[in-house]
Length: 240
Image (cartoon, rainbow, N blue to C red; front, top):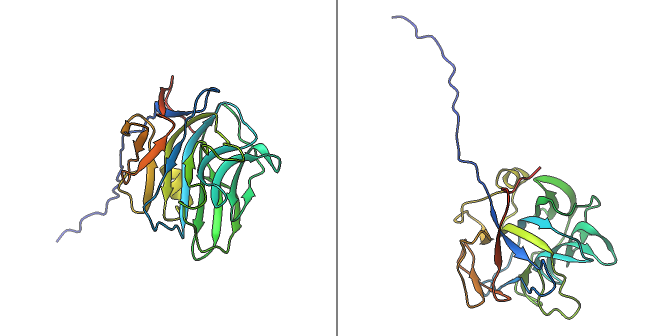
């Protein structure tokens, strides 16, 4: 019998590019009161976790809230007077920051991860690790203290710390996402992904009624300052 000659086969996976042209507007003028407060199901406790979001800052204040639980696990930009106004920081039961500043009027994908049982944590920008540390904490309850806020800590007695700009693809995970997962999924993920605890696309697809907004992952009711305004961009988000 004749021997079949060997061949090389290459497979290509084609996917439709994700274009984000609508985003959530946060505190871009003095009279706005835009934020989301989330009450997670009773008993929620994050041993490992990830916070991530697409963020565009018009101008930096002394302390700019991205998301988290004040005094427990807060992801923000700046920390007047301890951290430069345009540097990312994680603060609460543990605290550290990056030293490289962000620029205003530019889109970034930002994330923080914490992995149990190793205690390894990292702050990532556009999928690259900008800083890291090791913690000895068991985890945290996101409902503790004044609760979990996105974009602003409404009514907080020591300052509401608003973020002046836009956000999209706001996600909270009960797992530590890998650097590759962060880099490959900056513009979108499947809402049914394992470990995805909260997901606001902020593109107008979330239901907003009577000062409530439902997230895309679990349908949790978030409380807003009336509503989150959705802005249509002149061009799709580009991460450089």
